[in-house]
Length: 562
Image 1 (cartoon, rainbow, N blue to C red):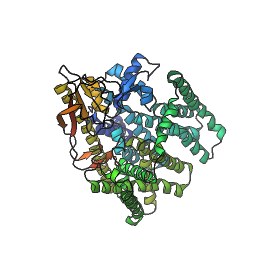
Image 2 (image 1 turned 30 degrees about the vertical axis):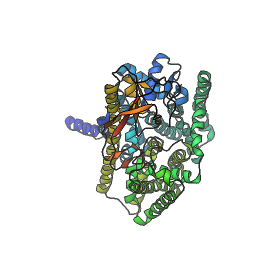
Image 3 (image 1 turned 60 degrees about the vertical axis):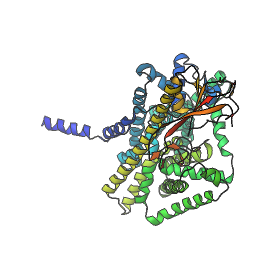
Image 4 (image 1 turned 120 degrees about the horizontal axis):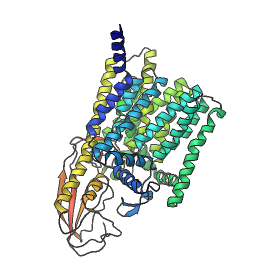
């Protein structure tokens, strides 16, 4: 009898949904633990290393990120909490890719378990909701970086969980914990400030007495005000307001540019949350999908015949393929936004308002307020969208439109394969950037002449670490015989004056061959839509390439660019 009871307990322990989710997260992300540092990872690592020297002054150093040396506090548009986390991890486990990425499995696990916890309140299949969140491309790709986005989402999700539970149970500790998490989310990424109006709206719509909850907002407000005072004292600027002014610059533009941004945001929503977008095919009848497809086609057509057509199409190697992908994913993005609206329309309660505002607010920030559209800005949507998909499945089942389990499993499998393929493509892109930096340094960095370079992100991290020097167009003193390496398909790389240099070599390294997250020629711009209107793109991906020039005329500053 005791043996049967033990076996029953063992089975219950093994099959517990939370443990299965843990295994899924580890299985999905473990293959990418050796991913080279890329995109903005170096900024966070450099700040973390500086924190070990000056823990009370995290941004008191200079960096060359745009072609000339500037203070770090002016370059970064993120608060430093994640940098402190990396500093601790680096001090204890080392600074290798494997060590840091392994530690960053913890935030990914916390988000997925938090999603499961939250979904238990909102739907009848919390495991499925958490699985959909896990297998969105934006979540998997973001979880393979050292940037602040996934950690911010950890504090965001658990703040919502504890705020909802604390409000219903009148639990002082949970409400206090939720308030602290609001502050931590904002100190991880400034977008976390949006938690305050979101949870206030949930409380007001739920008709909860203000005196029961409003006092807890003193905690995050006091912490954020203190942060403002400290940063102003250190740097003479309010970093939170600086970030706002930086993002506000994107709001200026023509009508055609606004149309392009809106269409891009829709494509990023549909593609970045691809597994949820694919569920639209089984959640709605074809005639219900037709309006969204029509809107996407009309928007894409209007964009194509607009004044910006030459500017928009000129970088793309296959314009028609890019347009088809935009229409497909933008249609999915429209479907996901409609899903949030209809959920509130049907239920009209505080919970549906919370999910709707969560999705809508993230989209508005991405499309209208942020300096660029990117997958990292879409990431916060992944949690409520997963829940909304399951709620719609639940709603359909109640109306006699039940979707078979094998179809649901097939949709999850297809979505997971797509998300893993996108993550692998991003991994190979980062690997190619490191390899091409190593090859360039090995061939041209061992001479008596200086090897300079343009370009940033992972290429800068590895080639600078090997001994090359970042070219400062305002101050660098370049001499005859020096070499200058310029990576293609990366920002902030102006061409040199042809009268001063001669091309010596072109170094190529192949990455992913058929799918990419960042390539202007295929319209892919996961980390910034400046590179393209798609979060990822299918097509023949060119190899990573670096052009190496030798300085052929005596010169001091090489700031004369074309």
